[in-house]
Length: 54
Image (tube, rainbow, N blue to C red):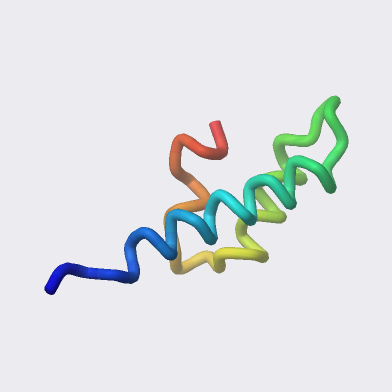
């Protein structure tokens, strides 16, 4: 069968993204969001660097 983990990782990234954008300030919050995503997804995962964060 196929890799069942990929959709879960995508949802983890989306959940982390929404949690981070609601926790960080609107003005100048890019550094906050990137730091938050690193905490939630870990530096070894590159999902936090994807287009979700741009």
